[in-house]
Amino acid sequence: MKPNLVKAAPWLVVAGMFLLWELICVGFDVPEFLLPAPSAVWKVGVEQFEPIMMHATQTFLTTLAGFAIAVLVGLLIGMAVGSSPLLYRAMYPLLVGFNSIPKVAFVPVLVVWFGIGTVPAILTAFLISFFPVVVNVATGLATLEPELEDVLRSLGASRLDILAKVGLPRAMPYFFASLKVAITLAFVGSVIAETVASNLGIGYLMMSASSSMNMPLVFAGLIVIGVMGVVMYELFAFVEKRMTSWAHRNPNGAA
Amino acid sequence: MAIEDVSLDVREGEFVAVVGPSGCGKSTLMKLISGLRMPSGGYVYVDGRQVGGPLKIVGMAFQNANLLPWRTTLDNVMLPLEIVEPYRSTLKKERTRYEAEARQLLAKVGLAGFEEKFPWELSGGMQQRASICRALIHQPRLLMLDEPFGALDAFTREELWCMLRDLWQLQPFTVILVTHDLREAVFLADTVYVMSKRPGRVLVRREIDLPRPRDLDVTYTDAFAGYVHELREHIGRVRAS
Image (cartoon, rainbow over all chains, first blue to last red; front, side, top):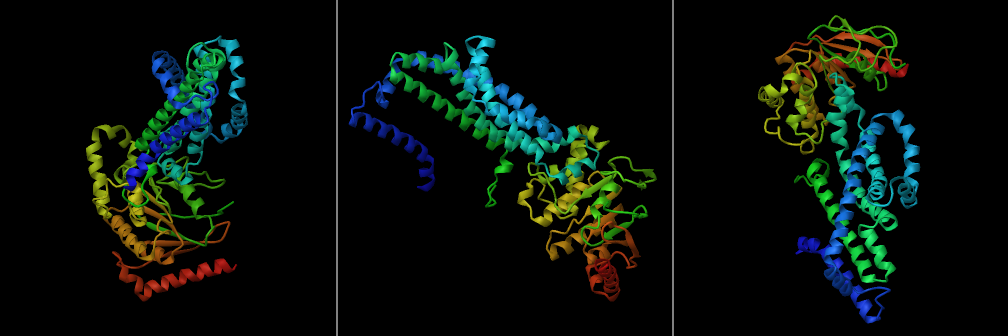
């Protein structure tokens, strides 16, 4: 009974939320242009399935592209910063400062540089999501136990050997944990850019729908983004578990 | 300056123990001998050659077993073979042979059947056994042990003394054991050095003239107690000064 309940709980909460939402809309007779009921959102979603999917695919691919660059760049910067105390000291203030800039403020700059369309969206997704990867990889590498390093150094291992045999494997749980955060941030980034400067993607769809007061379509867009975010998060959570099972062992011994 | 004017002379195949109060620079001594640190003055010679960098003929084990948690026991023991030549370049071809050697070594220390287990599935004593296997797998001529049994309970510690004694008796290699357990030093070593407080200096060199192979029973003899007593007095003097 209990394990089943644990499995069903997230679905029950989601279903409960939609039910409550529907009841409020029907019960208080909320006008559709303020808050459409889930049933109205569902209706629009079915009617406009194809354009929604088209825009969703665009957003999805844009996000993945930005995310992929973020992982690559984040891994490289994180490795550099994590394995050199000098670089760590030197780069951190700049990275933190850069991360503090709201990325929505950066989109106009990207538009000037690259024009309206997919490129600014990819870059915004990248800019917003690479920081957690850098921080986590750097932390994983920088917290390497000195004794572990001594064991390898006493065998004559080069810095590259140490990085490959100990540093990177040890940083992997940190890295995979950061992917979960980064992928959801990447969605935020691409949708922000699409609302400001694109004529494709869920962000654009929502902007144009809201300007014509088509609120059910706006909410359909929101829900699609949410679903994509959850699916990708779960995917990376699964990958994390598979790749770094040694770090998530069961304390009761049954590993 | 952690140590000063330390002069040790270790024969090939000798079992040396270094004892001293905590913070006497024992770990610095280890790092100097293994080439992890350069002396600010003086020389370190190993095997007739001056030490100028990390030595590959050295195996090391520390108080913490430091096994890699993402590797099985067998893979942990195999780690040095992935780094030290000539094993490194022949590892792909000879994997099965090296693996068999690693399994044999694990069996010798009583870890047969635990090869595929991960470190967290082993007890502290077993982890330390595996750690010593890792230090020995590339057949180093010098084994450096930095308080390897310090974190274990008394019974496990005595078990591991015997394990180390058997390994050493089976195939002699030079051992430098840093410890603060005098009984451990006397039971295992041919020669015991007592170091002073910081800056560490060698105060006494004492040869242990107990017949080998030594059994745990020897630790209850008068001769054994005499050695421990004598060394204890030196340590006491160090601490009082």
